[in-house]
Image 1: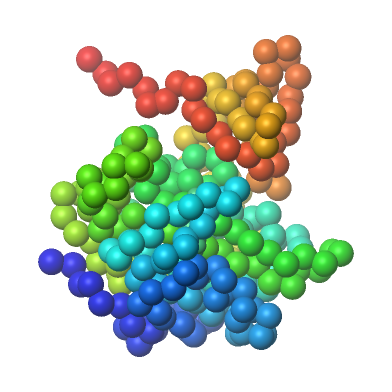
Image 2 (image 1 turned 120 degrees about the horizontal axis):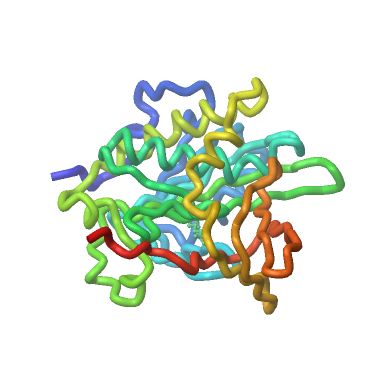
Length: 266
Ligand code: BTN
């Protein structure tokens, strides 16, 4: 049986990082870890300060969507103060850190759907939300919010069954959230530090993307684009080849893979 109780002390004990996760603010229940992280960032919290909740009552996703985040899931937000140059790379380091940590803790292989959904067997297991405060060309703060469906029985949430999975459903057993959080904090720091030392983060992110080479439909507000996802640029944007041969650069949007999941092999 995987543990149920988290605490700041259990997360930080002998954690092999220099700053990410060295200060943890833990709440059993919160509206959203993003709101607390923002408040702490405005107060000048130490870089790497991490807000963790067992349960969120108003978890949010991209484009103001609701993020279901009951007990048993992982919900955390990490405060960073990156230079402007590194801001677009935060989606890359966050999703790569999740993929690496899931594999280390469970052995499960996952993939990334552009820009930063983590997918197992064609269904979403993790969502990532980056919120930042930018004034002119200066980043006040950036917050990486990560939600992972860890020990979630999907049958209890019929509204997300068609699109979501959880680690426990994929594995057939519960997973230690504590192990996953600690791995995640170590990986986030490793990748974040590698940004400034020139690690091959963009290349690894690109290789982990399930989206490239696929027929996609992209919704940006009321605009819909169809095409083939050809490549990603270093700033994280997606380059989509349209049927008229033109290339459209997508900076943010919702992607549907038109040909996914693939037909099972016979
Ligand atoms: C998405 O897929 O749209 C992003 C979901 C992000 C959810 C996480 S859970 C921790 C943090 N707190 C929130 O309210 N949202 C993020």
